[in-house]
Length: 122
Image (cartoon, rainbow, N blue to C red):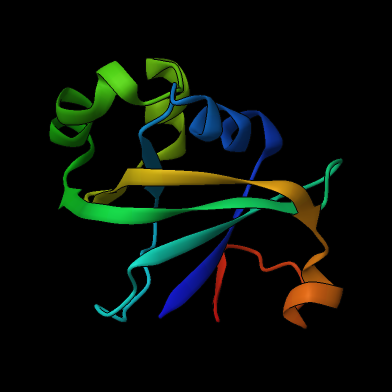
């Protein structure tokens, strides 16, 4: 099964450049059978630009998560801790086998869904 994640373009592009190997989330999807993430780059791009497989999902406190992921986080330490402010639990999806689409796809036309606030199951 697949999930479609909304990701800001600057971070989505870093994933496909190999500079960002973790995607951080405050809330993680509940279905353990999810193996593939479809990447929807939000405004101003508004396109589905590729996909990746999930190697692992790390769930721990923000301090520990930063220690484990900072080298390939693709974000600054300040941004990370602002994002997880007042959170006891933080999640990181470890990325593997990235595949950037040659032609970006339209979320409504190709997937028949609206851009999700966070994610949507496909």
